[in-house]
Image (cartoon, rainbow, N blue to C red):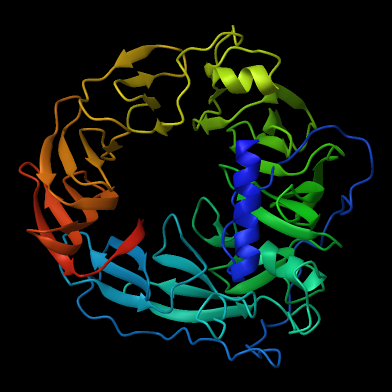
Length: 501
């Protein structure tokens, strides 16, 4: 109930400020086939080609769209990789060695952006500002940012005259549902090979649909066509399938009016219906894909929240339950192993008294928790296990149930280097610590800090900080001494991501 109340408050705040952003909780998926879904299961043409994307023509009396200029950066390496991050003025980039200064490569600050796994590209989603300087729901635009140089090219306006928001539209109207599918939900999904971008748009029809941009041919293809609002594109790990969900209405806090879920087989563009969404579901979430081609997903209702954690295979239509009841946290390993759980109070209220704790889906006996419950956990690729933190302990939990207590003296989860040889803790309340993995770290920074990231070789740590002695901005601290160097002064940013050549 606490989660639902917070969600309702969050959505109401969004409506009041007219500020689109990611939904507070993504919408989930379900698995009880029965009624006919809204979108038909059909074979689409192998390569349907759309007309050229429209140029931006704002609907009157909307404000003119804010420009997304191509800035001319200086000092960025031609080789890469580059660290890309957002700030209040837009997107900035810096070289991996900290040289070149922080160069603005895109402005203004985007609503969403996503870096390709390889290929020097980032997709950027923007929309206009209102008279008060807040994001509006009008005129969403998809652009492509390429490196080196930070060239920006507009790919498409994502709405048309039929579904653009007018001044007389109310938040519950169809035009707003289109905008919410594009701007509030997770969008911009790159294929594993980095050559194709899946996105949600509505420039070729009255509702939001699934589209594909091919970086090699520079063509946009429409992959779905139905009366519901498509949202949340998700690629399988091998790139063979592309899934998405559909909703009639995104609600006002108590959940969504779901239509269904679908997966496109990319080899022939055949559209598979995932399953029929239960009438009891107020939302579906895609947690990810397993290597066997099955989706990991779960449902939602406003009574106790997330529930029915399961896998579903698009072609065999086989559903495998993992946690039929409710849960409050879940994390996934690349092999599909899931760590999930709840505390004792939640178990009494929503799970028929089931014991609180963390459970592993990979263990034969799934009825007993393997660790006390904690919201502070995550999968750590460098260690091949889940890290679980409490106020006093840090545990490495392997998918086979093996546990190792680590020697950290600090609360919370550390940030591990890609090679797993070093770790760091970053505190917004004050302090940065870094050192060799499973050894006591050293304090390296005396101010508040946030949004840290290791270089790809694990030899240096970037973070944003504000120190009374060292200044405020983006810092870089290199091993073994980890002495912080201010590489971009008076710059507060976030969401740092590496752009790979």
